[in-house]
Image (cartoon, rainbow, N blue to C red):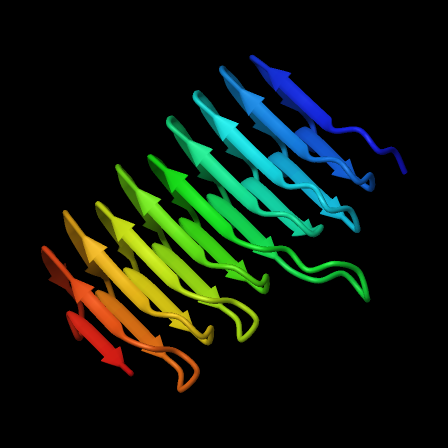
Length: 231
């Protein structure tokens, strides 16, 4: 394994399996930046960080499309995982954005997980975020986030994490937003547009006994229960 960073800067990229595939076993950071169209038969972008101490970051300003996932990122390194999209991200049969912070065997555990997204669509979830790192999980959306058969936004913060914060514009799914915080910090959800649960809750928020406060500030919310909150 190397000691340097793995960096990819791309405009237009197309692959039968993955538009971009990057795996980092080194001690440096893994960074991917795209400015055009990225298309993959399975994943638009697939990135994994293992064992090292560096961060994993993905920034897209164009269109990212995968036959399964738009962006799939797994961070098993000791740094943070961050995804920023300012264009359109689509997962045609699974998730628009799939992001996981987790420990790989006895290796290091990631820290924070941060997603800033504009327009995201998935057949299952629009955004799926699972933080098994030691830091905070934060999701911010400024456009439309849609999941067809599951949640628009699914966010799970494990017991090793701290706080969970979601700030969303327009979100639609069978359950609009699902947020579970098992970390030792606060759970906070703010919506500035329309949040819709087509067959379940508009917003579901669950703060386990490890967490602190639970705060929801919502604009327009619709579902079998518009807002369901457990603290």
